[in-house]
Amino acid sequence: MGAFSIWHWLVVLGVVLIIFGPSKLPSLGHDLGKAIRGFKDSMEAKNITPAETDVEQKRP
Image 1 (cartoon, rainbow, N blue to C red):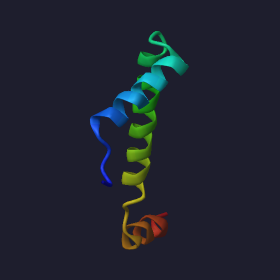
Image 2: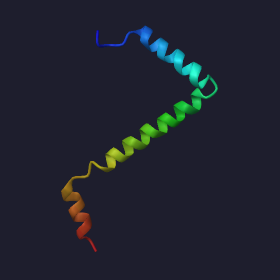
Image 3: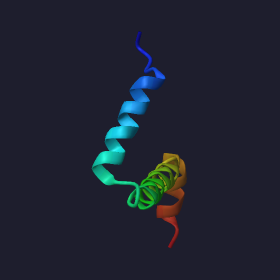
């Protein structure tokens, strides 16, 4: 009951097509991909341990 069925996703896809139109979907997907990639890159940059940052700060 908690999972979405195929009908839910078809309705969502239909609403997105009506709102954005088929011509803007490729650019919307490209922008979404860039945003996700940027988020992943920023999360990887924050995975530095505190000991690594202390060493970098002590260097002249």
